[in-house]
Length: 375
Image (cartoon, rainbow, N blue to C red; front, side):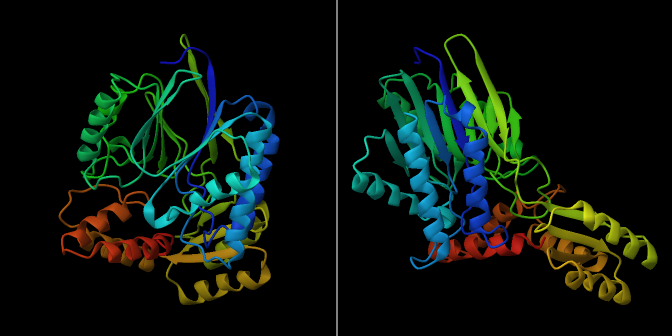
């Protein structure tokens, strides 16, 4: 167990290679983040990148991979110059594809004396210089969350540990997906009993706090419906006291929704002309309007008038059709709210019922990310 005060930063769900929020923009925001919060972050003992650094498998020749490699190298140098340990946890396989392994080669090539580890399996680390014990749980280690938990218990016994100090995880707890029984969702109470201080978990993009579970959420905004603050968690633990602070990404890309359903033609046009000026250029703007052909056509003209924005138009009929299609796929489940955080898991349950090959499921995961953005 720990013998001193320890500070650490947790970032997750960065999704370099995302199609809606360009890698160049995310990387620029990451650089600004370290610069603007440097006074606090430089005091950290450890930086954890807790999964989904990447959005998809990137081609060697792609600009996105070059930008990702440059930024990861900058993180390595930042940690080196500030004497910070660096730990990277593998996230969802269909996102990360173990691409963070590249850093091992970079560190060896540069002959850096850096305390660095890349973790792609269930593991417990004991930091002998601090006494800190860390449980690492990557995403989809086992399909069934209870199987993963049983493996955690087995590993703790092998390490002669009754508890660990902290846990760094990628996945979802039941509280994050309420009213849905998923085999892949972890039981928060079971893990809280195993961890003395804080549990950090990535995967669900909305930040939340449940007892000692800190879900940092995604670093930046990636789809509509993510209008909440984005960033990471700066955490302090000690033998006597614990605390945490959400460090905001002040430059997160804006995804703004304007609901004009039920308004007259003239009111919609006038409102949009005023509202759009309040949104930063480069933002994604979603418009909910009635299924009126002339209105939809008129609103589309704003795509040309305001070319600095990315528009998406939804009508009542399209929204209703989406809801019907989704419910048909999950009709065996009782009534609950379906959103971008749980629809992927629900559809995967249905697919696996048909004995689909695992490789095809990986392909499905990748393609589904694009579909979810339109829900």
